[in-house]
Length: 431
Ligand code: 5AD
Ligand code: SF4
Image 1 (cartoon, rainbow, N blue to C red):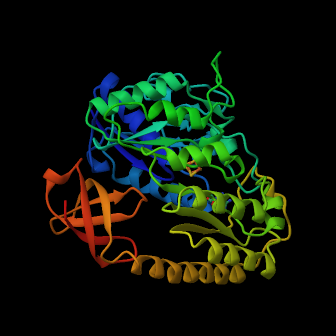
Image 2: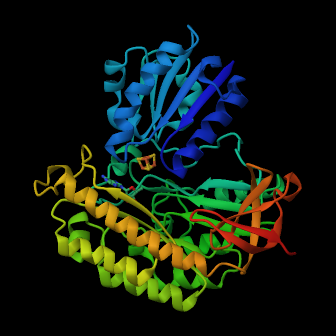
Image 3: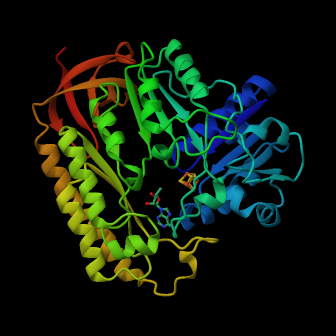
């Protein structure tokens, strides 16, 4: 039996897809194929964070239905499955089942049912032992929590992934050890709010916070790099920043989702921090760890965002000089508080702000990148890319490629930068 799976959205969804592939290949004998027309089972692992991908889903489902093998089943999984549920089968009656983002562990049961909908957001799979499957042998994605306890007014995720539950640290450490034994030198910890780790476990568990989890993981022999996403600026206490800075196994790249630089907008978003707190945390981080690179998420044109509020976002951009930004126009989402806010920003103003923000960031990035020429970075190689190049990441998360072949994969090398592009630097191995 052949399985085709399309994954949209965040790293969490990618890991959920890996879990579903593991269950289906180990328990049900499936084999993954690259073309949906060859598949007996087609899965779409959806994202609902903004409106666009949701509307695309139905046109895509139509295409799958038209061109698939006659008996092939179609399943819709992930965040849009959680929030639309039954509605998906009403709008696309050929869909065989709908499986929510918090019900991934039921994949091998639901494929045998017809028109089934499993979208219980209170379902607790924090201790479910999934089978093994990893897309990359070099880097292991590991979930450390499920769900999200925040109530950001723009965000649908708490409605699609439910309350936050931490995965017991013993299970996380076991996963990491297994991955390292299989050859991975890097682990990438995943959660909606990783530095809130340990707030709630589903059973009795000793008190272990995120800093302690990092300390425990870093004792694993053969594990050389630890990355994680996403931390929340509100929970960036001194203990966390100091552990980040002094633990040599933790990669020096921090994602700090700003969302807005205006304290007023942050309050309307219910982010729990001010512009000043955010800048204070950046300062603390840069003092403890001068080499850190910082990335962020920013939303423009949140309801009520004035020109002045937007200037605050630009101001934070100028002060922090982020190494990478992910920027979005606000998109109203069902079942969120902000959906009911009436002071919406004009679409044209929103587009203008997004362009202004991105233009400023491009200027900053060009200046940052120009300083990289001739510098030497320690690169962990992970992918073969076009024209006989191999690419990997520096400790501070810059994508770097060199001429080479698969003998570099899974290896660390010192690389001197010889030319600069916006998303990738090119260099040569010097040691
Ligand atoms: N509109 C626009 N962007 C959003 N994000 C989350 N919800 C929305 C929304 N309703 C962005 C945030 C988040 C990233 C994953 O997506 O910036 O950090
Ligand atoms: Fe990930 Fe959020 Fe999209 Fe769900 S809605 S896939 S949690 S980005």
